[in-house]
Length: 485
Image (tube, rainbow, N blue to C red; front, side):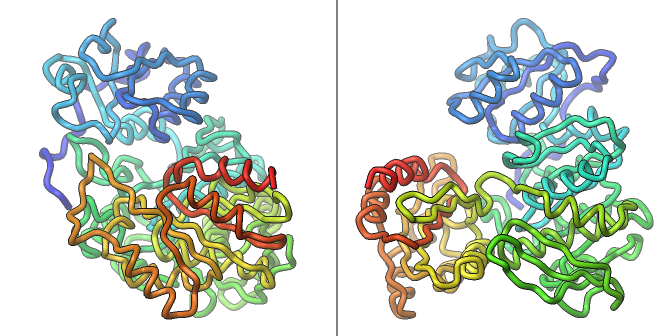
């Protein structure tokens, strides 16, 4: 992992007794906004600052009644708060952060504050892994709530069943997305080291986050750290479809390891079919059938998500019928195979996919749900890994199931400049896809992609947008253009 300052929890030991006013630096991030909501729900006065604040986070913060200051300045720390929480996009040299370090104000990272203030008296269920964290987290929380458990939860996306990305419940469980990204400039450890896990799901282990991890070995070491934090006999639910996840589980002798998969695992699924409205499969444990499960979302990647949730929910004491009812009622997370709508008979799907395994999973799911439709894949290389050539060949395989592929230019960030020799080549990707018989093109920007799709798509087509960012507002542009045809 890239070197930073020595790991630090922050400064000060502030509990709820001393906590009245909290200031969040970089408040407009998804996790920081959720933490602001949780703090408000517990009665704290919350304010914060950020450089640029846009919808939907600006709307969420406004609805919460949180004062947001634009720009980072030393004077933002006045009047004196009881605690400052620092988002992980803040670096040394930031004037507000430097003023904080020069003061005697107590401060914590977002995950450390969450662990100290919200998880210490809850049963912490951590969902970790390279893929499926957000969906599985929201799904597990929805299943527990459907069964009457009233959990708290925090997730890195808009959970449709909760109307947001956080909830403060009265039950014993806190379901949290365990992110392996770093905690803060003063603590380069993964966020999930702060989450006090009582049980965990390991959805997948593959290389990702090339900006902070050098190789797969470092990624695996971070997940081993999470596993080592689990108490003796704690449930560890592992996706057997990922060899590196199984390897990590093999070193967890102190845990109650439960694997899931299509065959050979402790918990298996079979009789998988898509009805056009539901994905249906049968779950078995130790060879004995538990019963049938139905999901609204398509594809094997959602079956994996549901299986991990199913197993942990059963281990937490829920019956099969309770879990199955919660899974079928689950509406999903925004931008995870989200059906935006049908416009001039063109089906528009929005997804957060950026890793090649996720891209492949999305396209396979849509092929299963819409087997006779022409499938478009619109892909923006925007994440810190996808912008690099590390998955050059993998993207050619992942995008190949589409009939039409349109690539955006590689997104460039001032905060993470990629050497041109190490950057993903969209031209090579087009050549590799063309060699497989897939029509592929590179567009200059979202406006050109919108114009192309609007001009060439026809009734019955399915168009999947895939990016971990705004994609230049492509979603709204396509809705408008297709509706106006």
